[in-house]
Amino acid sequence: MPQGPMSSPLMKPFVVLALPGMYLFYKYNQYKRRRKENAKRRLTERELQHLNNKIVSTFNPSFFHPERAHLPRLGEIYSA
Image 1 (cartoon, one colour):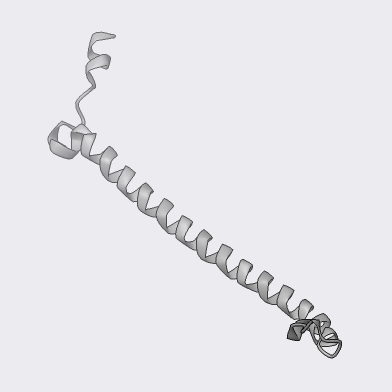
Image 2 (cartoon, rainbow, N blue to C red; image 1 turned 180 degrees about the vertical axis):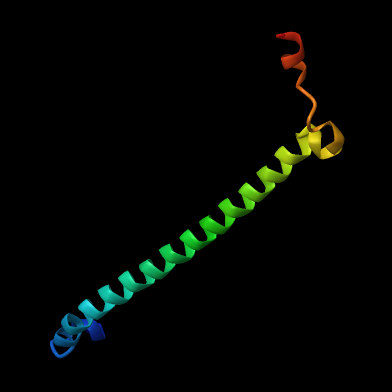
């Protein structure tokens, strides 16, 4: 019965020598992938914060009428 090239007795030392390098390569790729994901996450959070600030400023009454920015709010008028 023919055996595959990896099961030959001459290849076993090479496989044993390659395993630590393969593990380091895997860990390095994992590290790069995590850094890239974190960078994308930071960018997305920054964009969401920017959009949130736009939405808040849109619903701010002084955005539409800057001359009314100094006027009291409705609740402040009736609580006096």
